[in-house]
Length: 148
Picture 1 (cartoon, rainbow, N blue to C red):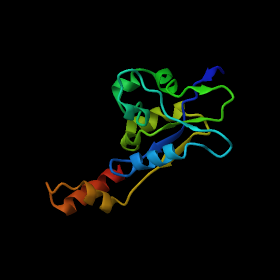
Picture 2: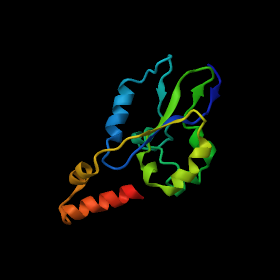
Picture 3: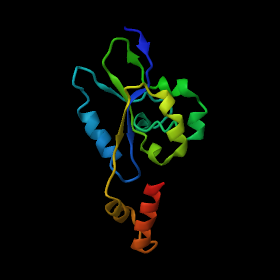
Picture 4: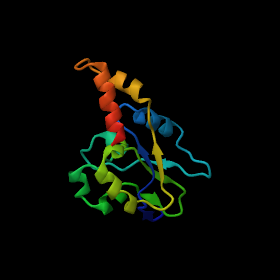
């Protein structure tokens, strides 16, 4: 077997609750082969972790995960030496995290791609609205959250 390298993710999905990251993730998983011959690699999960953790590592915005260190994060994507495969992190929660904005850039290779997945804020507010407050207030709260 070829020796492994640990470059971390080359693709990071950014978004917010209700913007479609899981659906986008499933579409990427369905068509995993990349132009040029490589494949998408999901994050390796540790024993006892839920299977969805292969999509959402949630390293940079969770103190307990961040405390594990950068090496722990990067080693979740073992790529065989000489392979064209790339790792993908689907931790959509990074978009709303000031900590993630500061912590992630030093970890990424210069060629890393950030993919921002958004939805219409009014449609998203309507989908998430639970009737516990006036709808106009929910839309305002959503717009305020996006402005952060």
